[in-house]
Image 1 (cartoon, one colour):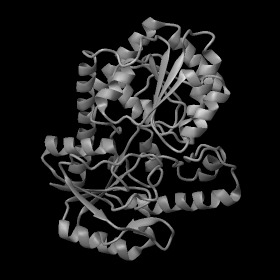
Image 2 (image 1 turned 30 degrees about the vertical axis):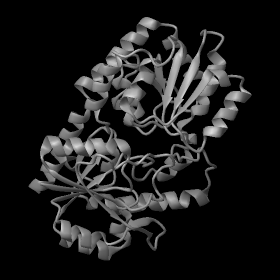
Image 3 (image 1 turned 90 degrees about the vertical axis):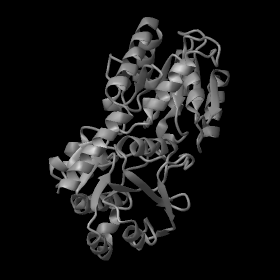
Image 4 (image 1 turned 180 degrees about the vertical axis):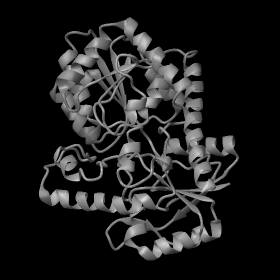
Amino acid sequence: MRICFIMVGLPHYFTLVLNKMVSETGHEVVLIKPQQKSKTIGSGVKEDTRGAQFGLVELPEYTAWYGKPFLENLIPTLQEMKPDIVVMSAWPYFLHFVLNPFFYFQFKKLKTRLICRDIPFNVPYWGKSREYYFSGKNQTEGGPTARTWRGYLPFGIATFLKRLYLPLADAHINYFDEARLITGSYGVPQEKIFIAANSPDTDTLLASYREALTLPPLLPHNLHRLIHVGRLVKWKRVDMLIQAVKDLQSEFLGLELVVIGFGPEEENLKELATSLGVSTQVNFVGGVYDPLTLGRYLLASTAYVLGGMGGLSINDAMCFAKPVVCTEADGTERRLVREGYNGYYFENGDQGTLNEALRKLLADPEKVARFGANSLKIIEEEINIHSVIREYQAAFDYVMRQ
């Protein structure tokens, strides 16, 4: 079976995921992505094509008449490739199916199956776009913005277009359970929706965990060390973590925060740490992409904490037996973090409940160890690279039967 993924970029972790798909299923996998960094890929996202065991095609990206990017010569490329299945990221490329009807006609002539891959993130239930927008739930990397009718107009139009293009796919692969209801509200039958929790290559991370256990600690022993891994953008809310260090330092001796990642907010966050008088307790490490090095930082820390929008860093931390403190954000964390079992949730944007969640963990080393063991168990037994590939395969089998 020949599978073609069409994405706005290739995050470093997804190279390993596609490699695993090739080795476990025997499918021929090809990825099509823009030649240059796409305008829609997030700030600070690291792309990496090294070590790819799948085909890679890079096409020029241009701005379509409706103002969003699309790929040049996509149809001729697919005609030559003849894939059995195309797995395309929903935003923004799916817009082209409804805003360029000639493209949709050309694609249908290929007689290939089409799968829509999406979180979905910032997507309201159909018919609830106005309430969703003005509630402030939709988030951007730039952080909170004023909610106005002028701002709602493009959001409402985008929601309407989803109602047109989502039913065009032969199947959908989403990241979290509620997506069945969200995507279903746009007219997609339930049998076409498959849930595959986003995951890094957990085999590699678990092997690094076992190796890291045999190595000397990377940092001095500290029972009160927190760690955050992720891009330094506003919606990650690292500012709340720095404030927590300030608020809790008198209760927990030597409290510190390790920040791994880079991004446009780095200097602002360093200035915040200085202004709060905790610059010596907040360690900005920069980007770390080697799993063993990352794991050694995690092993030297007590708990992983995420102030805002999540990502695969939660999976990473759980592979190294860390409890997690986070907020409900894009929904992907709900499958991973179970309240009172391997971590705690706090109210989105609420410093007080974040501090209280951290207080409950830091005050109880036995709970830290128990929660960490439970995190590792979830990865080993439930949510890992193998379970993800099984869900992808279920979607592939479904569309090939149609």
